[in-house]
Image (cartoon, rainbow, N blue to C red; front, side, top):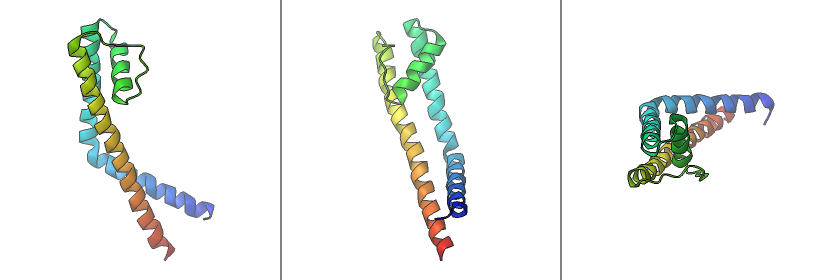
Length: 114
C-alpha cells in the first residue's frame, strides 16, 4: 500500500469515527457528566477537593484504580461502583464507534480497490 493510499484510508477512518461520535454524542456526554457529578458528590462526602473527586471518578470509571484515593463512607462506595459501570458503558461506546469506523473504512477501501 503506497503512502497516498494509506493516507486516504486513515482519512476515511477518522471521518467515520467523527460521524459516529456525533451520533452518540448525547449519550457519551451524559456519561461524562455523570462521572463528573459523581466525582463532585464523592469529594463533598469524603471531604476531598473537587479536583481529587473528579480525578477519582475518572480513575475509577476507566477502571484504572490507582488506590491513592479510597472512599470510606458506604454511600461513596456505592457511587464508586456505579462509576465503574458507567465507565464500562463509556468505554464500550467508544469501542463500538471504533469498530464501526473500521468496518466502514474496510468496506470503502475494498470498493476503492475495484
